Image 1: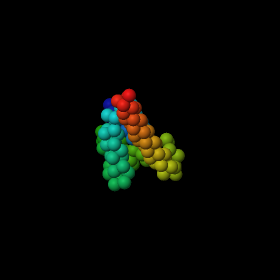
Image 2: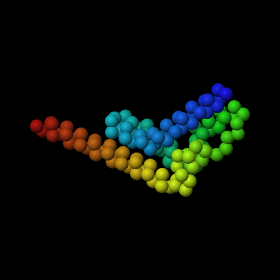
Image 3: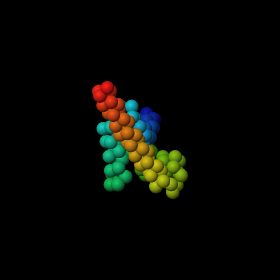
Length: 126
């Protein structure tokens, strides 16, 4: 039983990671310290999607479930996202929406950063 509970914790962490990938760029608006962790998460997600390597979180969850006697099958996205969070057949649309969220987040980050720099320059000139 404790293995299954730990596997559930990994599932929650996995969903948190996916939320961070989609929405983490907006954290950069509050502090630039989020840029590096968010870009690292984006790189890992992009490599996972394009190269199709096994996600370490999925591997950990599978291992924990096997320790509990279960027989996990499929990747995290197939098990918990497709058909549950995202309707079947809408994967591309959701991926496009996530890309747009990331673009908007970083466009806002750079716009805000530029506006702050302009304000500092105006203050120095006054």
